[in-house]
Amino acid sequence: MSKVKIKGTTKITGVFGYPIIHSLSPVFQNSAFEYLNLDFVYIPLEVKPKDLKKAVDAIRIFNWVGINVTIPHKKEVIKFIDELDETSKILGVVNTIHNVNGKLKGYTTDGEGFIRSLKEDGKFNPKNKNIFIIGAGGSSYAICGALINEKINSIFITNRTFENAIKLREHIVTKLNFKNIKIIEFEKRNEQTIWENIDLLINTTSVGMKENDPLLIKKENIEKVRFVYDIVYNRKTELLKTAEKLKIPYLNGLSMLVYQGAISFEIWTGRKAPIDIMKKSIYEKIET
Ligand SMILES: NC(=O)c1ccc[n+]([C@@H]2O[C@H](COP(=O)([O-])OP(=O)(O)OC[C@H]3O[C@@H](n4cnc5c(N)ncnc54)[C@H](OP(=O)(O)O)[C@@H]3O)[C@@H](O)[C@H]2O)c1
Image (cartoon, rainbow, N blue to C red):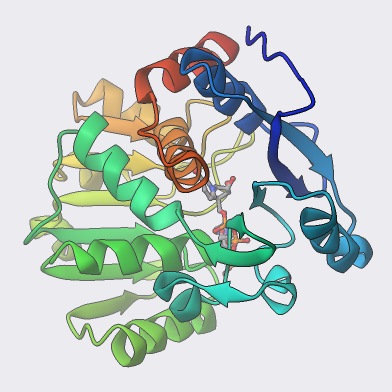
């Protein structure tokens, strides 16, 4: 348990979201501040969509150092800040704001957080690999972009709503200039031939968050891949249970959650994030 001491000099960081009560970020961010003896604190801030502009004004008024932005504000917040990093410009979302002398700069750390987690915790380098991604929502955009920067060979994408997968392909081909991408119709996702050369399977959907959520990919196909990543982080999903049974290396979303937060921490403090401390604090809180 973190024992952050708040003083007149304490620099304030936090997260805007709605709802926010389940956020795990205060746990690992405050543990990191405490470990490095930094005079910072991280607080959860419930912000209703109608109040987002006022909340962003508060960052300037109270001179808060940095704010994470989560569901449902990641897109909308762009309207109210001053500058965007390249990734946020391309994706049209922000999950981290840094206040430098009243000027608010937006970043998005999900994609880079995913890659750091995959390489450092998963010991899996995606370079030249063939990737199968389930989902075409916000996190899929971030993850696809970051994987393309890592010089992967190909991406296969399947999504419940076909049009959303098509939009993601359009984005990848036109904005990221990556052509080796194939959309698989959701109903055809388990056709065996697709799975012959897949190295990495990633679930970017919310399927798995609930107890009885189905396994979207058949066991005989999961068996063929070399690594499984499920970005869901509230429980061990059927996908991960299956990977475990098959002795295929896997990671859950807690790892990505910590790394994306670590990058925010580094932006705000200029210090290297104590990843092991952050992980320990969160693993103590959640059973995986
Ligand atoms: N570990 C981390 O750090 C991290 C970071 C970000 C997000 N996440 C997690 O990732 C998940 C997705 O987040 P997001 O921000 O990408 O959400 P999002 O933009 O709302 O996208 C949701 C995705 O899930 C699909 N989906 C939802 N219900 C489905 C169902 N019953 N069957 C099949 N597909 C379904 C959607 O398909 P349609 O297009 O058909 O609606 C869409 O592709 C959430 O569980 C979130 O908590 C984790």
